[in-house]
Length: 328
Image 1 (tube, rainbow, N blue to C red):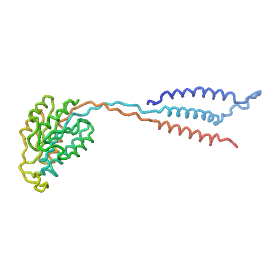
Image 2: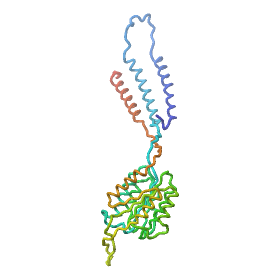
Image 3: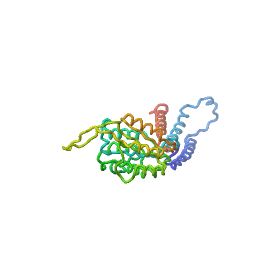
């Protein structure tokens, strides 16, 4: 136990002169009378009220001491504890090109990817995580952070059309590398989700993969889309969005090369359930043990002393009004 105001405990020294004064007073307050012998009083017991009178003083001193301790603010001691947990730096690179609105997923690829990515973020308790979005250009939506709630909420709020359309996989990967390379964790990885092939941008996907390899960053690539045909959105002559079945084209060769070059892994997600399993597998792959020091905050712990003071006061009042009640 520790105290917020330990200097107040010096007030306990006041109990010493109070006790000395009580003893001195007891010796001087009794009248004396000279008699020839005390034989007639031999064997008479000392009344219990004599002891109660002294006990009242002791109760009062104990009450004062308890109040002084309360004023000193007793507190629970702060504690450091070390625990082993698993943590890493992860950046999610999310394709937000128009083709992600294809409805071979429910409700569509874009919403399915956001939902699974948000759940993945919420489950990674000890990681620093960030978000990069890309289409015809790339943008760091959320830098590395350990605020999982904020990141998950941002993923849910990402809207289609925030960037110029097309698919710049290389640029999205390069932006992710720039954000994660300065991370402090020993393990760094990028999860890249796309449903197409690189058709624009300033950085070639394979070049970006070589850069990631240089920095020791693993890249897990996920191709989103069923095999065969899928309903893709298009704008008709009246400006309305309609859907037309078109072949699913994913540049799996490039995505596989990116993953292989960086020591990561390529996955093909054909529906939301498979996508969920992919993220679960990545969750098991990307874990690094780290030691975390946890600090417990100081809390006031005066309640037991307050209860003791209340009990002492109640006992004194009880004795004074029952056994030592003055006669009118």
